[in-house]
Amino acid sequence: MDTRERLIASTRELLWERGYVGTSPKAIQERSGAGQGSMYHHFRGKPDLALAAISRSAEELRGRAEAEFGGPGSVVERITAYLRRERDALKGCPVGRLTQDPDVMADSELRRPVEETFAWLTDRLAGLLAEGRASGELGTGLDPVATATALVAVLQGGYVLARAADSAEVYARAMDGALGLLTAHVR
Image 1 (tube, helix red, strand yellow):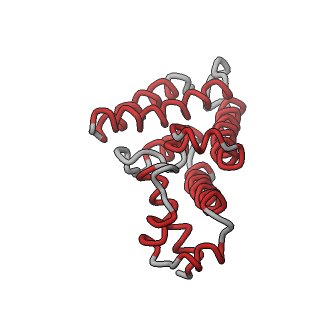
Image 2 (tube, rainbow, N blue to C red):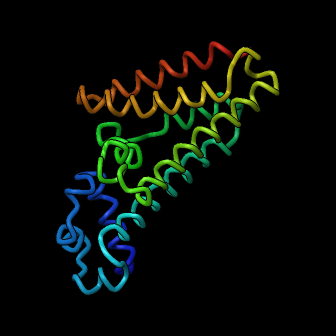
């Protein structure tokens, strides 16, 4: 991994662990093994590096989600695969956690990839649910957009509850509950 990639990877980890304020240039340099000159050679400063790291986290989240959404099986099976995929529930979502960071949310450039990722995720789920409704897999009473929004909210809320209880089991129960509500619409 080259220096630029080490800087991005280290910043991603630190943002996930400490948030934006807790991610100092010194901490990034120490974690990445890169010097100050290397950091400023590749990035204009901490905000520029943070944007690259947040964007990379968002891209990876979308890539992992699309692997399940575009995989084999029925719509409900693909959504189930996505919701039940192995995750570090106690660490939280690397993109979702950023919504609790006031410095990220106050900066329109840093907030943009977070906002775009959740819009993409909601739209992608809504499209799958509409596909399931059109094919007859899901009942016509299901509202794809409202259901997709609820699934994203339960997913993110599951992380919060798991962290509060210090139990990944709480996250798993939240996913089971969401899937129970979804499968009630299966024909």
